[in-house]
Length: 437
Image (cartoon, rainbow, N blue to C red; front, side):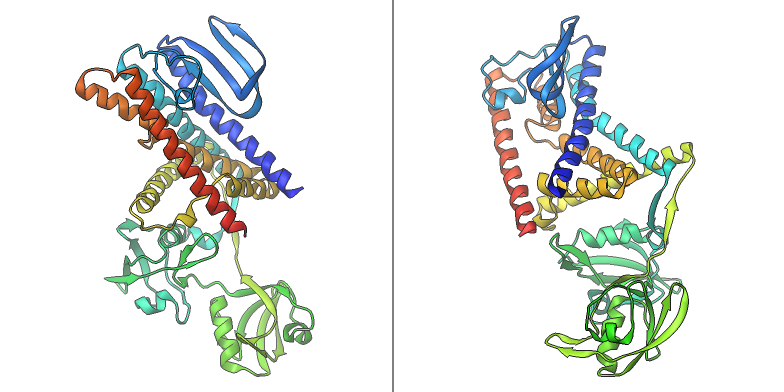
């Protein structure tokens, strides 16, 4: 059932973001009076529709976005996959053709801003610390951050040259740079200090972590049966404040305290439903150290990020600018081999994200749709033949030499672009399958 939910959620998202993208091409083509032969919701066989002023408005069998066929733009993607019809010739001024091509990604950006603004109007719950300035309050022992020389009280100013306003900015910068030596500027008691840290890649997505962060006390998510924690009376939801007097600021502190005071019994000071309690726990020796038998998360206060409509639009625009810069930064690192390919996701992983967001609720689902609309817009601006950015690059080259390339040359360029996209799809599918297994 989960698989079907994932597929359905992905179909809904793609249907919206791709259709809006194609509507951008369609609308500008109509404004410039280019002949629009087909404007379809969905792909494949035509189910039904109506023809108005030479345009076939249709519903097609596969509800995955849609497509628009515009006469006068020259060879398109259908040429690259071996269309039986001859490729159409280009017509009309190049600047008009360029605006038609750019309108698709532009509409994806507009959709992303509007959807994100809608999320902010309704309100979305986020961890409170992620909106706060990145002041270091906890440093895990033996972590990359400890090795780099971070100190409690350091306020992170920039990472790899990019300013950091919040913990959200800092965590993203570390996450996309595992294994890289990053320069980090911090404010230490009024003086600017430059440190270098190499984030450690963790999880199947190879996300970089440094072991520095805000003080988030460990919270018990699960107590294993017949474990020392179960025997001592610890319960899911308990927040661990200290172990034998050692105050805890992270899950790493808990692990270190267990090892330091084992075999115990250790005095655990906890909060249960906000009320302080103490329990005696005796860790058990296992192959990988002293354990008490719990699965832990962090104590995480959540806040509702919500704005009035005008401010929500402003925040949506700010989110767009931030995410565009971040995405192009990641793409640049991927291109030069500084970011791992594990961080790329294909349709399988995106379907899983879509299903998880749908199960969380409408707000999370719309937020993911906004993010994917933005990513689709950026992807289509890349100068790869077959994508809108590739078509724009061809138009720029033709403008530079003051003549159009021949139909045959354009067909070959599009075929190369098609081959590159197939290779990219194989790579991301391989990544997705590797993450599953």
